[in-house]
Image: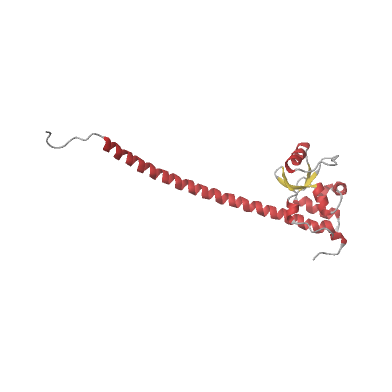
Length: 181
């Protein structure tokens, strides 16, 4: 049931949409300031203004600024629009930074949206964990299969060597036994 409260208007954001806005940069899952601002219902400059006012709440493991190379790479790999341009390099926020943003923005929508953001990060973490588990199981299966194939190869080697010996013995001229005419 949708809430009639205007502060929650448009808050129905799916985890899939949020997950699609999570990027892997420097080996860390992060969201761009502009994407979080959109989800939290504020302008990007307003979000960054609040971060600047509360900078002590955002250590490096909560937020960092992209380098030019990282931003260009992000644009080229993910087709992020450059329309309108940016005067400053974007800030990116980890899961913890996204939660902290909800508290410094201090709006009901930001607090409610942060729940969806956290759920998206958790879903992604669970998916990656499941993927790692599947990779591990596949590697185990592959190793067992490889060992079985090696065992079969050895057995076939013995069979081929035995056949080779038999064929060599068959092809040798045989001495005739008995009286010759």
